Structure formats: structure tokens, C-alpha cells
Image 1 (tube, rainbow, N blue to C red):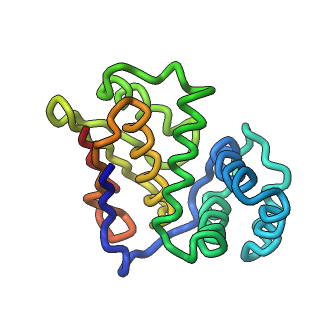
Image 2: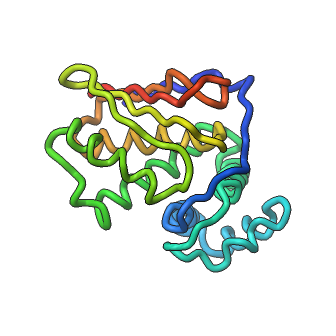
Amino acid sequence: MAIHSPDRSAAVEQLEGGNVKGVMLRSHVNLIIEEYGQEELDDLLAHLPRGLGSAVTPILASQWYPFEVLIELDRAASKRFGEGRIEWIRRFGSYSAASALTSTYKVFRQDDLHTYFIRSAPLNSQFQDFGRVSFEEHGQTSARMIHSDYPCFSPVYCESALGYYEKVLELHGAPDGSVAETSCQTLRDKACIFELNW
């Protein structure tokens, strides 16, 4: 699988203005617990900036949490476990896709990837209360997912999305596909655009 991430050296972020559902946060927490243990997670949460860790104890799947909490958790985990490499954060997206598509949302898996992406784009509002995701078909084995109108954004979130789309392609039988983010709000573009080929 080929993943192409833009040069984020000049990236900016806006952490206020939106919330994510607890089920999304729970998925990221579960990855940390599975790989590093509950004690590591507890310590990580205790050291999040501005006491954000206390906002997610406990994490309720149906509750809304500030976007900032998710980003700071992922950033802290990448520093502690991934030597600060932003690419390490893709693991959260990959884990989220694998968890969703093999359990709760497995009914959304399709033989045809275009059908999957058409059906999954509207689900955005179930996991975050900001922005929208739209789908564009580009040929028989390519598509574009467009994330737009985001009041809050972060390169951390975009890297997680790359991991998510990578795992979606793999789970639909396209392990040799490619995912590229060709436009990004963190680089002052109007939308985050993910090009998918399989």
C-alpha cells in the first residue's frame, strides 16, 4: 500500500469549534490499551495539556467530546510510543477502520468500493458534529473523498484519516492500492481531499 502525505512543515491547526463522538475516542484508547496497557494510558491521560485527560474519564460511546481532546491524545501517544513521528498516528485510523468494519459497521462493507464510499460518506455526522464528507467517483478503480467546511482541523487528524482509508482499501481486498492527501486545510487549502486508487 502506498500512502502519500503532503509536506506538513508549514501546517497550521485549529483545535476549537467541534466535537467528536466518544466511540471514536474509545477506539484510539483501545489501541493504546491493547498495545501498551492500561497503566500507560492512565499516565498518558494524566499528562495531557490543560487537564484534558480528566474530560474523558470515563469515555462514553454516545457522548460528545472536544475535538481537541482527540488530537492531544493522539499527539501525546505519537510522542511517547512513536518517537514523535506524525506518520505513527495513521495507526489510530487503521485501527478505527478495522474495528468498525469487522463489528458495528460491518454491514457497510461492500464488494464494490464505490458503493462503500457512497454509503459511508454521510456517516460523518455520526462521529463528528462539524464539516461534511462527500464522494466523487474517478474511474472504475479510483475515488475522491472530500472533507470540507471544517471549523477545526489538525495534521494529526489528517494522518489518522490516511490510515483509515488505507485500512478500508485493504479490508475490501485492495492491499496494493494507494491513498494520497492532495489538498489540506492545515495547509490553507479549502478542503482536505483524499485520492484513493485500487
